[in-house]
Image (cartoon, rainbow, N blue to C red; front, side):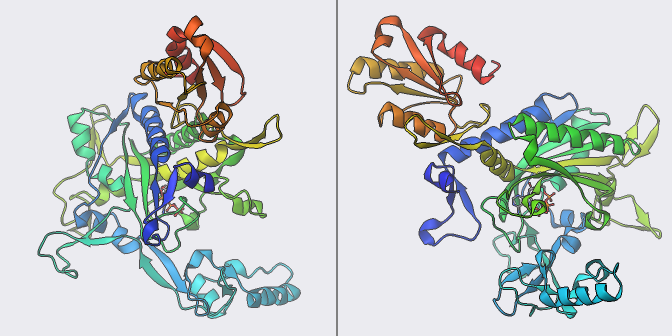
Length: 484
Ligand code: ATP
């Protein structure tokens, strides 16, 4: 976190007004890193496949979308307040209290195999004072209540704050914008099942307990894809996407030791999901309990035909239309088999911000130099590095060297993000670039004026190589893995 702020990746938002809880602004290097993550995802998910289209739907949609998707009724967290320290807490994050442990010991004395924790629902545990506040340890907690996580707003100049006809929401996921455009994309792009629709964009959730830096915020960005398949093909395709996604995180340079699968147990599944597997990252390596070190980076759900059916006008229950507001039927006619069906949907959904956090944490390393000084090196994958190359003149008081360094930088910049820096001694300049993950530094020196060559220094090995200025762009493109 301190490196992020010091070097311009992430700043606390609204800081000059005392900040805004769990809101963050991305600085000059942070915005480049986020853009590189999104570009890498889009290239992998959309451009490098034959069965994918992209869209960019609105953040504010017709309220009916959230009515029929189930979000108005069910997109909520169970909430309690601690009467002792006044913290507002998510009920699933409470701890077992002292009273619980005493009761558990007693129960085990009487029945050695009897475990109490799984026997009662949350309200019953609260009634017995068997849960406690993780902040102050008190078991004096309010009853359970439900809190809808969608941000509300009103549409139109004349709208009163409480006018239900003007009520709208900021989207809590990008997926619904894809479902309501399923037919538009399928028909305009002449797609046959199976195919997918991808989208990157902001989502908003009024989280009860945001925190842990950019891990959980109320405004965040998602990279989601909905893959439409024939019912019956869903389980195989779901497993394929689980494996592709795990491999994608590895291609970003994240160590597989810090990634794992998490199969959601039945009781955790969303109401529409048949199976969900999350990819976890070791976001909290400092925690002693190994199980608590992990948390969700991405979820890959089999959403069945729930969403397309829910937004269609045709499905009926007891002779009545279930959706009375939709004007379309989102079923699909399969020419090959002459059947009409509602496609099943496989959804890989990742957070841009959590990916950025995982990438930063994984890249952070410390190295001791010859003088025994500690140096931070951000070993970012070259594709993600905010700056690919820094051009540094060895003597900033020599106009010819400075001019050549500027010319080298200008030559490189259409092909890669390059910067020029002469604001310190060479050792300091190298250290600064290592700390922000720049894969290469190019040094222009006296010799360069004669042999038209420059020194290229590698961030990870600190090794140096002499390269002809005329060949520099091709050399760097190859080392950075830039294709064209
Ligand atoms: P969690 O259980 O952590 O609240 P979720 O299961 O509700 O997450 P999904 O609805 O599956 O999350 O969203 C897909 C992805 O979007 C998550 O894997 C995560 O990377 C990202 N995401 C969700 N909520 C947030 C948030 N509040 N802040 C940052 N990223 C988020």
